[in-house]
Structures are given as C-alpha cells and as structure tokens.
Amino acid sequence: MDTLPKHSLKTLDLDGLKVYVYVEKFDNALFILISKQVFKIGTLTFSIKELEGPPRSTTLLGWRGEVQARILAEKASSETGLMTLLSINLEEEHIQRHFRSILEALNQCIKEAST
Image 1 (tube, rainbow, N blue to C red):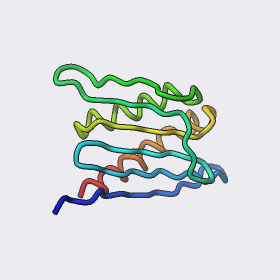
Image 2: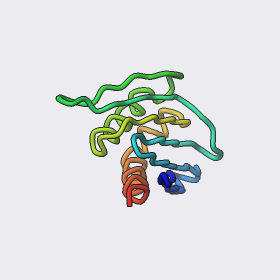
Image 3: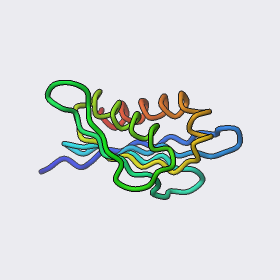
Image 4: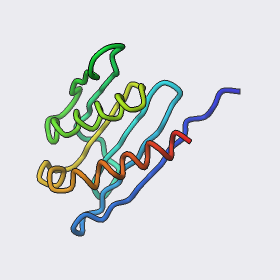
C-alpha cells in the first residue's frame, strides 16, 4: 500500500492577525500554504533543489510577497530535497514584520509532517 501524505498545521496570532501555516508532505514534494484568516491561495511559488548549487524558484501566480515566498520555498526545498509548491496570502508588511515567526512555524510544520 502506498503511503498517504502527512500534514501539519500551525496557527499563529501575529498582532491580532490569525495566520495559518499548513504543510502537506508527499513522497516527492511539499505543498505549503501560508494564509491569513481563512485558507486562500495567494502568490504561488515553485522551487526545486538542483543536484549542484542552490535551489531554483519561480513565481507562478501573483506578486504580493513574491520575494519572501521564493525565499521560504527555496529554504524548504533546500532542506528537504523535495520540490516545493508554496502559496502565501499575506500583505508584504505582515510578512516582513513577522518573517521570523512564520519561518519558525514553517520549520516546525515541515519537521512534524516528515516524521
């Protein structure tokens, strides 16, 4: 029997703003959703770890938080070796102000989904 995907969800309270960090881990990929208030697709970024050198990423849809989305997707694919599809639905102001908290929650979710 094939293994089912594993997932993890963290809810953050960032200055009164509820932010969800959700990770679904498949055998060969990660799907990451970072969203405010409700689950909505936002800026969509894809990243893959190259055999040599740093991971590469591209934005497939959207522009809000594009740089931070690419950083988070590249970090996830670099650390896990899995291709990563990441969606972020937050204003850049919130992403920049709470980047460290979001990154910590993301790392915890990836770890939980990988066990």
